[in-house]
Amino acid sequence: MKKIFRGDIMLILKNVDIFYGKIHAIKRVSLHVNKGEIVTLIGSNGAGKTTLLRTISGLIRSTNGSLVFDNLDISKQSPDTIVKKGISHVPEGRLVFKPLNVEDNLLLGSFNWYSFKNRSEIKNDVEMIYSIFPILKKRKKQLAGTLSGGEQQMLAIGRALMARPKLLLLDEPSMGLAPIVIKEIFKYIVELRNTFGLTVLLIEQNARSALRIAHTGYVLETGRIILQGPAEDLLLNKDVQRAYLGRDVDYEI
Image 1 (cartoon, rainbow, N blue to C red):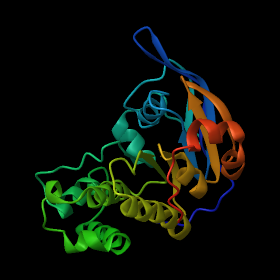
Image 2 (spheres, rainbow, N blue to C red):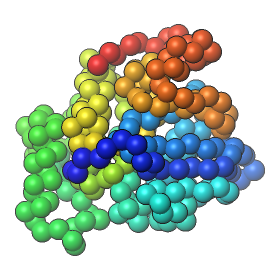
Image 3 (cartoon, rainbow, N blue to C red):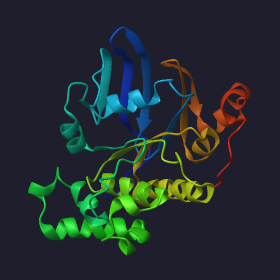
């Protein structure tokens, strides 16, 4: 992966509206993600966080507003085109292909590039994933469905990285994992940013841990952005503390 330096804006959402039938799920949301940053979106269940990620990755169409990635309007693009542009999405629940082994799952992540890359390039990409997540190399012939939850999450992230993204969308990567595994997953997210310069947009129920590793934070409630700013400022915000941080376990990296 090419190292990216912070500063330039990579993703801009402006006045985005999303409807499910008559339900106004996302209401004039505006946000931006700078290159080389970790940006987190926090909020309660049902606030619209997953809907927003699915819209960025092209799985849901916005009704109004603009979505601009790397100076290109992606609001009407198909999901596979958006992957080719440089956005990879790790969905909530991991969704690995359980009947396939670890390596085959990783290879599926390169399908958009396959016609442009020779086998040696793909092999090099797989080895890069193994260098980030060594446990996957040990499990490479093991069926994905037999992996632990943490290993499946590593595999889902690794599969997304096979598409060589500029922006990684992570939806609840700690969901259902043991505390010690959650700490490890957050450590990997920071490493991806620090070592490879990857830009990350993170949705996470554990708001405290997400804000600790992020540069910028947004708070989404009932489809609206109600607070935004440097993540360290949101950590100290009394309203954020009362609403989102009271029951969090702090998985300090």
